[in-house]
Image 1 (cartoon, rainbow, N blue to C red):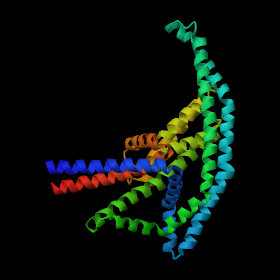
Image 2 (image 1 turned 90 degrees about the horizontal axis):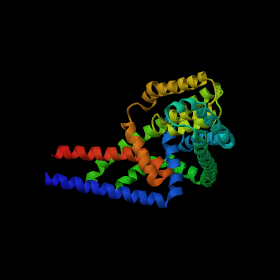
Image 3 (image 1 turned 45 degrees about the horizontal axis):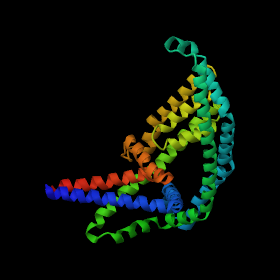
Image 4 (image 1 turned 120 degrees about the horizontal axis):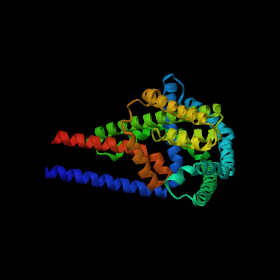
Length: 347
């Protein structure tokens, strides 16, 4: 029993030290790892197409060129349509914030007669004015910072326009070789176990990256199109925010719904109802149809695990932490599960 406890303590200590070293390295190599992470995500996303073309006797170089042509087409679409529209809507939102808050403030003040029955609301208007004045300042500061941060991010990301394709090229060509080379650092006695761990982590990551990105894109697109048909302002931003935040299961539609209701303040109640029906419908489509068909049960991670992983690693490592959160959680699950299974067999 003591020997087992000693082994478990040693294992947990090694795991903790490994995570600390990983966090230290990530903080030091911030943008380099962002370039590598984006290239790795693209490699995982397009590897089924690349492997399919290879099986059809297409040369590796030609297969990579086909993948690159798809990426370049999407990048052109991103640069000339998505990014400009996003920045334009953010600028418009920045200008509209005072009017939106004013409408919300007036709506609250219209219920003053109700507050009169509950508390002494003689100073209600002054109280609400002060609160909304502070909220407005905070939102304007946040919006300005968001626009600046977004512009800076894409500027710095532009520096990787050569680095990312270069990394992606070698990952697509030699990714199996890279995986096999990891075995050099493992003793011969443990190589088979290590190979199985790498395969399991690789399977989980492949499913997560491809499945989650596809689901996020479809959910964001459905919400944006639905809000456009309902003539809701800032539908493009809401769709993008909903899609990105849906990286954490079901968070995107909830945030998108709250934003949509805020942007339709002052409109008839039927608009609120239609917006709510839209988001409930999208949520149900994701839960009943998209997740089972695209993600299945391959991830094996509970939504709460994903939420806590994103919060913890996002706080520790910022944007990179959000990128790495679920892959790290998946890798830890595989490693710990295999270790505990081996301990049970040994016992």
